[in-house]
Every structure is written in structure tokens, then in C-alpha cells.
Amino acid sequence: QQQVKQSPQSLIVQKGGISIINCAYENTAFDYFPWYQQFPGKGPALLIAIRPDVSEKKEGRFTISFNKSAKQFSLHIMDSQPGDSATYFCAAREEGQKLVFGQGTRLTINP
Amino acid sequence: DVKVTQSSRYLVKRTGEKVFLECVQDMDHENMFWYRQDPGLGLRLIYFSYDVKMKEKGDIPEGYSVSREKKERFSLILESASTNQTSMYLCASSNLLYGYTFGSGTRLTVV
Image (cartoon, rainbow over all chains, first blue to last red; front, top):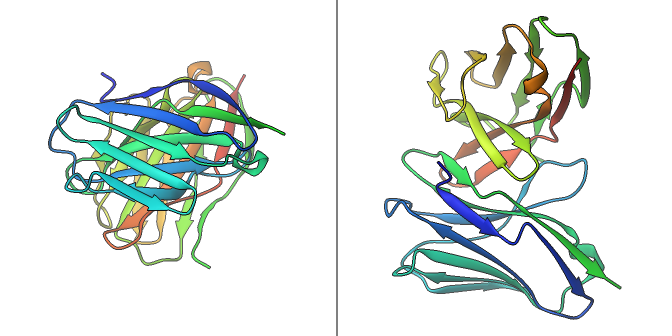
């Protein structure tokens, strides 16, 4: 069963636009929601993360919005740049340190 | 610079071979994980370990085993490789403070 559902699978955005990736989860015991960024040939790297007692977290051009009642969270990339082109994964942490990942979104920023 | 090192970037093995994927971390992390990454499926947890000599099954353990004889090393073993195990394999380590650090991955092809 897919505990974290991510959409869209792929996304094309013009340079300077806003990229939005959405995730939904079922397990209310999840206590930490990170986003990872992966470039070709590299492992995923932590981009930004949020805890469920916060509705929004912003770091530079990257913002996580979190809706606990809807069990949804999203990543917004403002002023998207070609260097942001990568695969993005949302994740949720369950008991211990285990992360459950979404299916991934391949983001392409056109110059 | 903290690191998770996977011994091979690319590996080609024959069906039925026993395959060892090695992962070493230099961060003194307690927790180590093996994921496989497939397009459209995201990252799926194979096995994890919270301590030396300890191992726990993840979501897709069938056909795999692991070994953790030392804190810094976590090995994934394919007992008898099959073509459906062709995939990207990612090792990660973590602690409570810094979250996950991934290796660069091993792309395994079973022919």
C-alpha cells in the first residue's frame, strides 16, 4: 500500500514560475515530513522539512505548506530556476527513524 | 564532509548469482537503511538496522538479506539475483539530529 501519495509524476515550469508538488498521507502517526531533492547520478538530499504542529515553513525560495486536517502537504518553489530541475520526493517519518517516500516528481524548468 | 559511500556505482550480474552491495558511513550513525528506487514507485524500504547485529524487514524484503557486523557498515545481499531485482539501490544512515544522508546509489542490472 502506498502510504504517501505524490503528484504530479512530472512537471514542466517556465523559468521564474512557481512549481507546486503535492503529497497526501494516511497515517496520522507520522511526525515529520521532509522533502528530498535528487539530481541525476546522486542520492536524494534533504531540502526542507516540517513538523505537523506547523502550517508553513519557508527557506529561501522553498516553502512547505502543511494541512493536518486534510492530511496533505505541498512543496512550493518560487521563482523556479533551471538549476532546480531535479526529482523531488516527499516523505513521512513513522516509528523510529523509518521514512516512507512518495513516488517522486520529475521537475523540469525551461529557460 | 559527512559521507555515505556505496562501493559500486554500476553493477551487472547474471541471474542466480549471489550479489553483495556494500555501504559504509563515517558519521557514527546508529541507523542504516537500504532502499530501492524504481520509476513511478519512489523509494521502497528493503531492510533497516538500528544497531550492530540488528536488522528489521522493511516493506519489500523478499529475495534480500542484510548484514551489519560493524556500526559503520551495512551490506545488502541478493541471495540469488533475478531480473526483477534490476534497480537503483540506495543506502542511507541517520540519527535524530541530522536525519537521513544518502549514498550516491548502485545501479544494478541483472541479466
